[in-house]
Length: 280
Image (tube, rainbow, N blue to C red; front, side, top):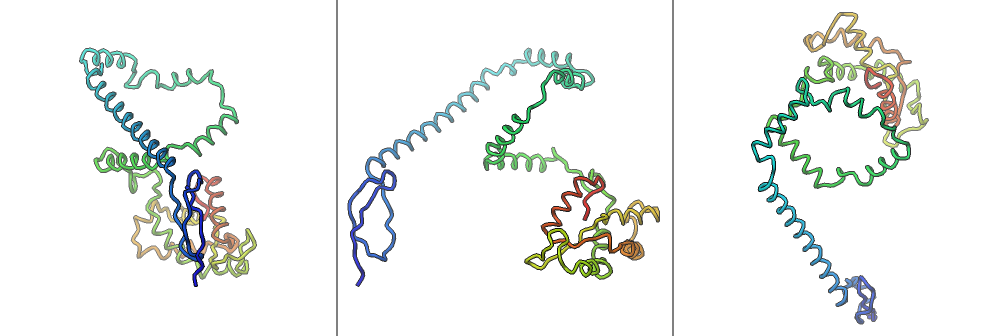
């Protein structure tokens, strides 16, 4: 037989006793309720929140209506006068307060920011960053997408992009696919399939070979030797001799065995110190 026991029924907020109820020992957990006083307080709090929200919306609409009716810039005479003043303060289309001389003059006597103040600002941005708000992120995303679709913002692609390297991505991938047997496997065997940084084997069994000399340097050496500006100008059918030379230039000393985590750390380090690109 199921054992029946009397259980005190408590308010989930103030924990005051509401009464007793019979419950089986292994029965379902009872859902706590609110007492009459807590219910009243909860309703009052919701009313206050709703009234504050409605007041803020009313105030916003009132300010918007006031600006539409009493905006001084709606007057043509005021608008022309302001435009004339701004034009007088501009030289070559640049406002005087935005020129390099004006900026240097404003910042000449400015004291450098202290380390304590930097820490305060850094902590504030970590905890009160407006980009943590989903509302702000959605609003910025919609604005950017709208400007992209309308053509107001145009992204530079292909050879117009500032990171364009002559369309060598496909050639880079082709070289990597040919490196395994002649170079990568030899590096693994030399290091006995153990990460040379943390001296451990990854749990997943996945190992990488990190380029001490970046692969782009090997490719650039071949480009300089044959006076090639971009491999995109050469048919892919004629890439074989150049890929073979890039592969043959690899020495076993040019790579080390690393696990994925250590490889990411090494890539980040080489990216910071090497102006030519990532040391992969």
